[in-house]
Each structure stands twice: as C-alpha cells, then as structure tokens.
Image (cartoon, rainbow, N blue to C red):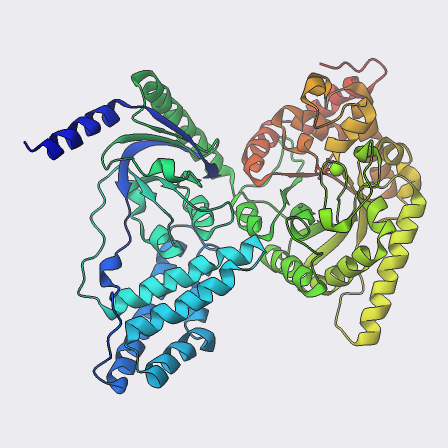
Length: 579
Ligand code: PEP
Ligand code: MG
C-alpha cells in the first residue's frame, strides 16, 4: 500500500471510531436511525466553458424542448407528491410551472440565445444566476429562500438539455440523505420508502425542503454547518428532527436508546395520524375547535397538516423584525392574504403588532425602559405610533376580502384603548373608501385577554369587542409577578395557580353570558395536562403550536365534558389548589 493510501486509511479508521454529535435546526419532527447517503449535485452536465452554439434556431429548439420536458416532469412530480398526501406541498410545483411561463425567466433565456449567440445551457445558467442574486439580496427570509426555486428550475432545465448524462445514484434502503442543500424537486423525488431522514448543511425553517419534509413525514434537520461534511457514506447516523440533534457513529447505548425511542414514536405517530381528520369531540359529545398559532405565513402548511380548523393567533412581529424600516402596506397585505386564502373558509385571527417587552425593533428608536414588560408594549406602543397601526389596519381590511380574517389587539388593559384602536380602524376604512380600494367593511375586532385588569373587567370589555382570546403566557406572568423570561423564577411560573384559574374561569363565563366567542392562544391551550381543566371551565376554542394539536385532540377525545366540569368546579372554587 502506498504511504498516501496508508495515511488515508488510518485517518478513516480513526474517524470511524469517532462519535460526532452535531446540533442543527429541527424542521420536521421524528427520530430516524439509518445510514449516510450523500446526495451530490450532478454538476457534470453544466458546460465549463460556454461555447458558441451550432445555430441559434437549433439552440432555441433545444431550449424549448427542455422547457416542455420540464413541464411534463413537474406535472408528474406534483401528482406524486399529491398521492403521497402532500396536497398543499404539491403547490410548490405549481409555482415552478408558473415560473416556466414567466417572461423574466423564459424570455430572458431566449433573448440571450438570440441576441448574444449563447448556447442554451449557458443562457440558462446566466439568467438563473442573475435571478438568484436578486432574490438573495432581499431582506425578507421567505422571499430570499425563493432563490432555491430558481436553482431547482435551473438544474431541471440543464438536466433536460443533457438527458444522456448519468442520473443520481441508487439510494440504498434505510438511508438518511445528507446534502449541502436540497431543492424541492430533489426532496420530492426521493423514494420515500427508502429515506428515513434528511440532514443538510444549509437551509432554514421556511425553506421548501423543510416544508416538504414535514409534509412527507420525513424527519429532517437543517443548518448543521460544515461539521456534517466529514460524514462518510454508509456510516450509522441518528437524526432527531424534534431537537435538531444528529449523532454520527453513535455508541451502542445511544443507538439502543434511539431504536427503542424510534419504535415508540412510530406507534404514537400512527395513532395520532388516525385522529387528524376526526373531530375534537369528547366522549359525551362536546365538540371544540382546535386552531393553530403561527408566526409566519409559511407555517399555515403545518397548521393544515396538523388538522387545524383555523388560525387562533397569527403573530405579525415577523414582518417587522430583522430589517431597517417597517414593512409597507402591500407587503403586509400579501402576507395576510396568503394565510387567509390558504386557511379559507376557516377563521384567521391576526394580531396587530405586539412589540416591546422582550422584543425590540431598533429602527423604531424607542426609549430605554427599566421594566419593558410593564412599558410601551403591544397596543400601547401602536397607539403611541398611530402610523404603524393605521398601515396594519389598512392591510388587514384589504386582506379580509380573501378569507375570514379577524383582527386582534394585544395587551389591552383599558376600554379606552379599544375605543382609540377602533377609531383608527374606522379612519383606515374611510381612507380606503376615499381611495377606491376594495376592502371588507365588516371585520370582527377582538382582544387578547392577557393582563389581569382585562380579565377582571371582562364584562365591561365584552360590550366593545367581538371576541376574546386568553393569552395565558402573559396572564400568568402579570398575575403571579413572574417574569416569563427569567429562568431563576421559572419554577414559580404556574398555569394552574388558583389565581390564574379564577381569571380564566371568569373570562370564559363572561363570554358565555355575553354570547361572545372565547378562545385561548397561550401555551396552556396546547398543554394536554391542562386540556381537561379547560374543557371543564367551558373553553371551546383552543389555539396552539401545530405540533401540539394531535396530542390535545387525543386528550379531548378521551375526556368527558361532564366529568371535566365537576373536576373544574373544585379547582376554581375557594379552595382551588395549585396541584
Ligand atoms: C400570550 O401572552 O399568551 C400570547 C399568546 O402572546 P405572546 O406569547 O405572543 O405574548
Ligand atoms: Mg402575550
């Protein structure tokens, strides 16, 4: 053996013995134990030096044929994803099909072939590069991720232009597919029965790959960084899509733990999957509505997959964070519209900006506060900055034409705040009317009940609004004087404290008497340990992280409303215990 080979093989032996634990971003839940398979890009088909084509007409014909073939392939891919249960994920390929008709792509490529005499491959690469650069420069993460769609189309077109080149290698069974990044087509094309998990060096929560993986039920971890690169084909790998952890060459005890955990999770998932399209009805016939909390329009897909019957809280802060100036009306309108349309006919409760507390926006240049949670936060802030509130109202009113949109105000403590907000909403309507812009004149206006003052005065506030939503995260913090972000008092943060339960009970009861819808969108709504109590208190709308829906539904279907009511009456009574 040559010296070089000997060194290589001893390095390899060392590596094989090495256990590697990496941390990434878990984007699709589940635990997978399998073997490394690297998905490499087929770059061989990309010509290194763009040569002059044989003839413009010939190149145009080659390009148009590739376009046609791409269309056919995309339709077939879309059908495959639909059949595998990803109805909404399949829409990604609708977007690709639309792009194939877009003059910015097709027209520009043809122009390059005709005007610059480039061959079809080079024209495709140049136009795709310039579009990718445009997308990559956009601040909005969702739009930035769309550069990946262009990349996907580019590879598809290049593949169709040189079909004789080798296709991707055969994937062995029980593979965990590793890649620097995966395009939606690559993800959808994976033979699902042989892929146990996906792990990528790059990627983010909202990349299409992440969404597809979730839709296909394949555990996935992204953003693992370059530390993933040394993984060798065939090595054993454990991937935890919940925590985002990945073990390479795990030791025997970790492997044994993972295998038994995998079996347990699989059984549970099969059980929960069966519930997806069943109603959230108790044994004695009480049906409640389970809705989802989302913080980005992309998450609607997750909500639908989990069987959510609406969005109980759409936090709009994502639009305002990590940028240099506030989002304009059109940008907001598109984000709200996307959610409203996807969720129709179910309701979508969109909350106006809740900034302050632990969330800051540097470009608003707000004064430093000693106690930001007790300061200019939520509605207080937007009333102090009417420009922000008005633009958001205008966007919401227009988006409400496309679905059942409802507007929710955060951090309300006083009836006057609602009156001021309503005045701003009416002004926004008057402006839109004057400008001749179409909007929905009747959009329900509700409030978060998350401050003890609001919970205690629920009867007065009920006269001014169309619905309540209990925000227990803050209600607990403000009732028990426990900073929700301070881990040294974390033990005292107790959703079952009698003071909290009494406030929750009061709001639900006021809602019943005033015939007002009362939901809950704080974390408590997604905690199966609280489900029976909340049912017993009469709560009929629970909104939570999409991933919590199946377990809460299972708890509801096992519960009895009558038994829950009896148990709850002890909890909220004068001797209510803290468990
Ligand atoms: C809450 O306070 O319960 C809530 C849902 O709002 P956030 O967590 O965004 O403050
Ligand atoms: Mg809150």
